[in-house]
Length: 414
Image (cartoon, rainbow, N blue to C red; front, top):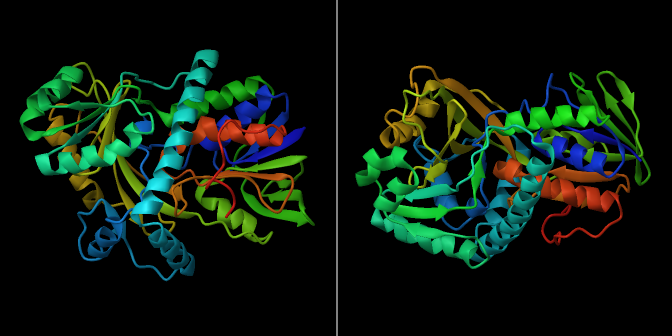
């Protein structure tokens, strides 16, 4: 079957790889000049089933409200005149109940565990390079009060099969000696030994090359301008380089997916949530983290990627802008320096802001809708890399008329 994948982020590239393995003829189209130039470009780099919580929870509405006049919140809400933002926000707020948070978290966790298993299979099969680090991730708390709440929250994942260890500051320093000097600033945490990290962009670029070696065609610098339907089938995709036709289409355009399908009468509940990151050199002279983790009190994630260190933070509801200012990075850098004062060269920072394609529930949109030859693989949110291989397998199974290994409850067009 001839298949056209729309989008070359980590979701699109892993779907292309999986479809190639099934023997399909695959092409990929993207407006960017290379793979993984948007949400996958400089994300947190954590493959983290141990942190697969739904963002929509009972505590979030209060945080979003206070962010209207405070700039130090991990979640920020910026007023815009975009009616789609208000419609999406209302759907998000409806998910902010204890029961919905539990359901959505368990669905995310199931997909993340499944996906991580397939991710490891892919890495073993291909040897793809991505500056990967196994050995687990640390989720740390600064106070006894926040640690008690965090352990209680983590129990839902432990009850669902997530391997965890409650750790004190001494054990944290044993797991990652780079945190030895900061142990008096940490009350304790949760260690998930099966979580891992790496560079999602490097992974995507190198996997795209492997796809090309297996015969896939990548059409870069080719924006998708419209999708044209004929009844219940997609007839063609209009791009900046002319029309493209295939037997089957896979939508993996991230935050731009809603724009692509609006012309065929589909309203996708996906909206961008901006995240910020900095990347800095980490050489032999530095004491960089041995494994990644999250400063939970400040919601700042970090990991080492080869000779670099990545620091990420913030979820900002502010439309499609990827602009950023030095003040946006102050809190995350302060947190990182507090834990890793010599973690890297803080005078040589690369700043970045990107857009996460979020659904109100936090789970992606997979499978078919009203069009029989358009398969959705989008809306992976802040865990796109963790979810990508599992979502790709589900898409390939559906296209191959096989029953997916994982139930699709809460992950279909809704």
